[in-house]
Every structure is written in structure tokens, then in C-alpha cells.
Image 1: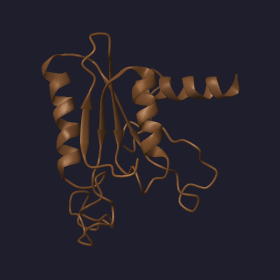
Image 2: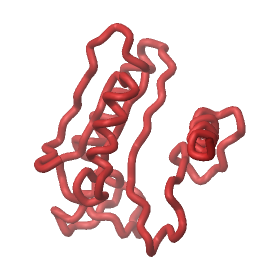
Image 3: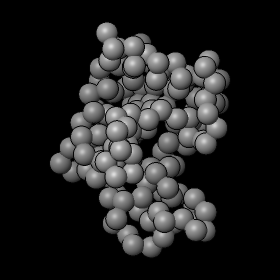
Length: 148
């Protein structure tokens, strides 16, 4: 991805999976842009959303994740912005239609902040996911694929 202007791509195919691929830092988190496009195409996902701002494009701090946040307002993963609005609109549509769906958000793992970690699966909270939750099932499936 050379110029990842903020975008939402919707797959109109009737057989598309109820899956949303989200890329919050397509340039800063190296290779996640390419990974997200490949997964969007390879899985026949329903939607792909790509943030358009670099996390350091605006030096003002975001209050979205708490007043003591170290995140900046342009960081699409940690502020209310067009990317967050698009992600919420996708969620609201599935909720309105009473359709169960999965959303996957890609981030690069920093060698200083996450040493030795190749992938981290979470459902977006600090609560450890239960064994029957989708995030655990996907995580275990990836581990099994990697080990086979």
C-alpha cells in the first residue's frame, strides 16, 4: 500500500463471509496493509476498512482512551475518527440485521513492546477470552495451522 487513503471496501458477492478486516496503521505497522488485503481477498470477507491517517499526523493527545492516554488524536486505533465511525457502522449494520459476524483488526507487534510475540489475539478487553469464544477458536486454528 503506497497511499492508503481512508477506505471501506464492501464485497457485494452473495457468498461473502460475515467477516470484517480492519487495518488501523497500514504504513506504520509494516506489512499489515498487504496482509489485510490478502486476507480480505483470500477469505472472501464482506468488508475491508483501512485508516487514512498516520498515528503521528497530529501531535495532540487523544482523550478517547482516558485522560492519561499517551495516544495521539490521529491514532485511529485510539481516538474517535472516521475509521472508528466506519468500524461502528459495520458493527451497527450487522447488529441491526441480527447477523453474527467477526471483525479482525491488524497491528504489528513491536520488538520492544512485545518481545518474542508473533501474534496476539484479543477481543478488545483485558478479560481473558473463554475457550468457546471466537477469538480463542481463531487463535487455536492459527496455531494448529502453523504447527502442521
